Length: 251
Image (cartoon, rainbow, N blue to C red; front, side, top):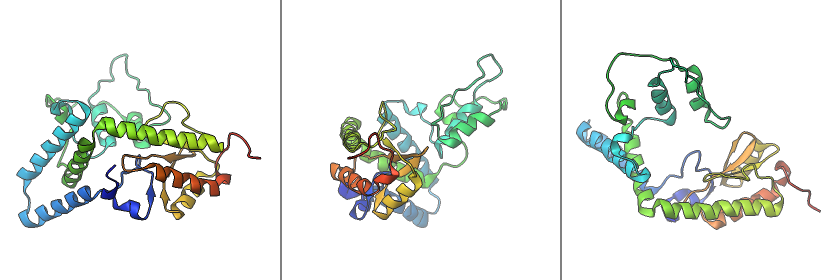
């Protein structure tokens, strides 16, 4: 699915989209457009604010929300911090439950949060969680990336990812590799490993890009991956099998 728009696949097998997606030609061009606008127009804030609203509308359309329900922030951590700061912890419901699998900085937000009232009326929309100057380069890139997702369609991407993650689980089970995500999961699959950082490094040496989480090998494909990527992954894993945890010993 649009694989030719992602140059990294000319040299690598990229399966690390939960960390950062592969760079498309469209997003690369969007960054170049931002630099061109900055160089030739100086500080076109009218255009940049319009880009902010276009990005907000595009993401809202993607998730079935109203644009006023979307806040464009610099990171998930910043968004959670803004959200947490808006809650009143003075009542009886003053505990927040987090799981062991939260992204570290997100969990830390809740651990350090203290109520800070400033006595002002917030905006009536999600824009209340936006602060300071928007990250303009990200707006160019984000809008270009959202256009790709809209063009493909969420349902089509979902079906494709189900096929790929099923192939990963099937390949692992056929080889006796232990799945850390044997039950419900999203667009990624994790394999239990013995020395996961060494395994990630070896796979990178084999031009296969994955990552580690909580002692497991995390494989996170996206719409630009194909079944051949999964085959290459398992071909490499077979040569580094001693670094994986196995369900059974091979004869």
